[in-house]
Length: 131
Image 1 (cartoon, rainbow, N blue to C red):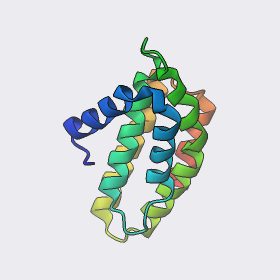
Image 2: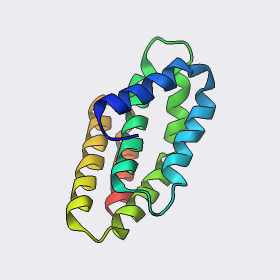
Image 3: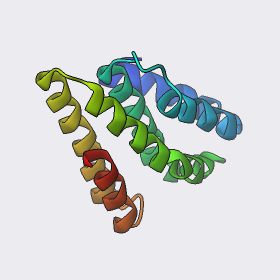
């Protein structure tokens, strides 16, 4: 998975083409963000976050079972942002770290605009990431 719109869009389409497996797909997403190797690049981590974001954005669509994604993903986001923050701190190069900060910050701002979660939840994720 890359951060290109096409790649993320294709992965999101896969998720919704198999919406009956939302709990299993959500678990794969959780592991991809929370249990990835320390050597996983920031770009790959951002791509995985983008996929979660797209799945969340579309979870309110009138597709049977689509709403099952939101609570599953919301449940692991605090852990995911702890892991994303740790990866951010371990990156010694300023340019990739700054780019990652921008990508994650933009994702959080989008979630706030879309009212996906209560504001306090999004602020908590932001505080965890930038701590």
